[in-house]
Length: 171
Image 1: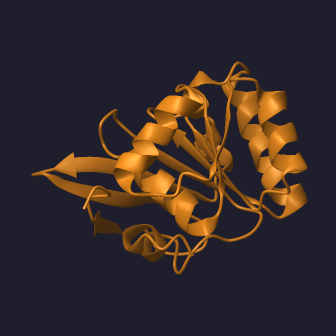
Image 2 (image 1 turned 45 degrees about the vertical axis):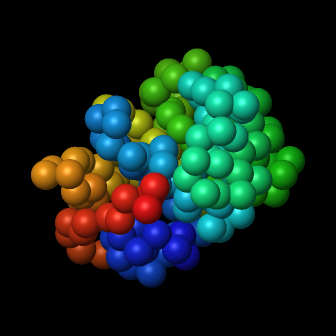
């Protein structure tokens, strides 16, 4: 359970062990904010490929989170997976997979294998459609319409597709 009502609704009650979830959307659609809150709520490992740890901690503080979940800032796929394995992370959030140094196909297969082999949940944040979506169990698109944050499942192997409105993470 992410304790983010809109996400939990789309995920039919929460995350499933062994699943790969893709969250996609344009810059500025609160993907990082929503998933940082979720990471804090679940004690998940939050990995950034774009921002320095210090900047993320300031951002987390602005969100009102404990920011304990921020564990790594790296673009190296091996470092990312080794850290998640070493920390025995059951939920790993990667913001964003677009900046990883490996090819899209390799990223997709390695994240899916990591999730399945270790019964972990991997949430991959992206700004674009990628080949990861083909292996993903759930794909959620984040959009802003009329100042509302809308989350929409565009693929869901475990339930129906739907659209829900999310609360602003800064409120």
